[in-house]
Image 1 (spheres, rainbow, N blue to C red):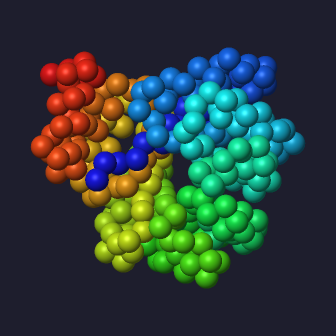
Image 2 (cartoon, rainbow, N blue to C red):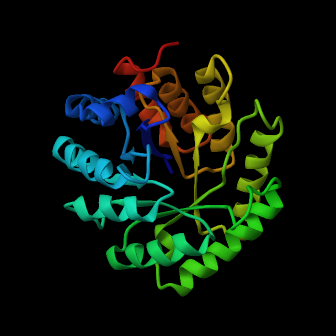
Length: 269
């Protein structure tokens, strides 16, 4: 089964995106949405974080532009429940939008689980409890079990749930990528029917040549049967690596997607 691609370029960690929000540069947002869709993104993540005072309005603005540009599902991405609610209020098709994200933090659960239940939409949950990020895969798996229980008891279909295994920068925590792999393996054993997701760019913060690390790490995650990933679909070499990995990992029957991509010129070599 092919991995689902969520385009993560519209994020205020990027100075150009922050400036677009500040200047209300609709053309910039529209170009980013369209470019990611054309490059193969199946969901578009929208992050509008800057300050609590303006983030909800920024999110409404971005949702309106994105849904006028493409018909893909939108991932409404914020640690602030009010911002996610504002994004959903602007969605014409909230059943297809993603709630991104919840943790075991009570406020987020109380605010966002009813929203996910109301719309029957996908829900991203970070394998994180109320405290600091758990530093071992085993701890994250235990948190995930608690999340699954809470989500299930809230009346939300577990086939809509994506567990984010979390990734910290290897520049700060050298074992971070290995811990995320341990978490992924543990989730496959403990919760085999629950989908998994990760934000790929998190592994490389603070390092040069970040795209190289993404191209190396993602096929390893795919070997561990990652279901979905937040990434930059405009990295053509990364997208080609996905096609190659799917071919060799028996996720592409008779390598037809790989062959088609090569014929279309998106795979070199």
